Length: 259
Image (cartoon, rainbow, N blue to C red; front, side, top):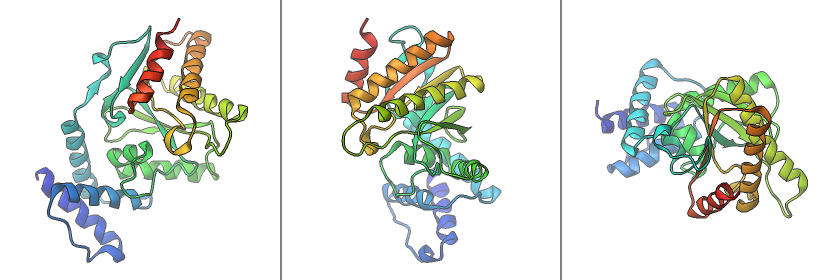
């Protein structure tokens, strides 16, 4: 199968799962097909599929990521000892673990083709990630607390693990509690990563964007918490601050190059 054949197969199988969409016509262009496939994966409820589906999905996603271009951590240059700043698509980064800014359901973003990192990570990891998260949450018996973290395999992503953390949602004025909770996200991820022998971890800009934490304040907390953790624990884990926007890159660059 080539990529188009895999894509058509996956779309057809996902459409069959939902009676409401069974008669939907598959678009002719690859761009529209990709959008439809992503949307169908986004709205799919937790649960695994047959082995044939998973095999073709895995082949498709791994090829899509390969075509986007995988960035190896070894190709990055540290800003300071053991700390990196990298601007790019976190789903294409090969390191031990990446951090997902999750919501309290911990099941990924159900909004079709949404631009959040939660959506991207679940899309390119594959349907196994939502199923795995659902098992964790069923076992826990309640929604994830803000500031905590969970770890799962990364499935089709180039990294080994995904750490999922729920950051504070800012409604109105930023409070000291919000700041403490965001710091807890970073600390919880670092602690959990150490327990799982993670040698390198990439943090996204937790709680910014959809959760409205001010970018500059969030970056200050992120950098301070990581530096304190490394100093207090003597950790040799490599830490990558992953940014997508030029604004965040400049904020982190100033923070990380300051004495």
